[in-house]
Length: 242
Image 1 (cartoon, rainbow, N blue to C red):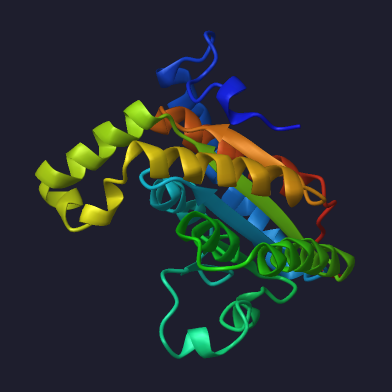
Image 2: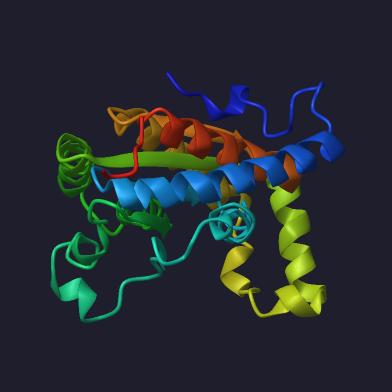
């Protein structure tokens, strides 16, 4: 049972920033080579799901980890608030076209999990609808895995204090100011509701396990995501054709 209050959002005491950054450089090189053979091998697809509270570092993971691979074989899709046209369909309608084919890596920066997270907090869906969505998500992830489209899920675990600091940065730093939205500054009650809802979905949609990454320190977050991704690709026994 996942209990986010009992999971640290900071690196373990032995972690070292300089060592982690050097390790990330080596991991980026490995990821480049592994993705090349992954593409050539063509037996598997890979869906990477990035979830986390605002400012937890989803964009940062894309920039510092995903960008290490050849973008001919990697795509990133950011799912924002559904448009009016998208709301006329079932909640997965806008998702289907972006599931990866074999040989490709697809990153979801936010995902179909937003369609249980937000309606729960905002009270816009019934308990029956939400229960159906939880079941359907688990079923679809199993379906993808059975068809050799692996699903690698990350929850970037950030503290309220660190989140507040990063949102404050967005107000002042020129290269981050464009990201700031007043909606980022949610009330304490709503923040805790989001955390509780995340905890529920981490437990209820766990047939395909979650990797919970301490995200208060960017350098540790990036290294750990890269490490999980490297180990997953290495475990596939990838080969060049011929």
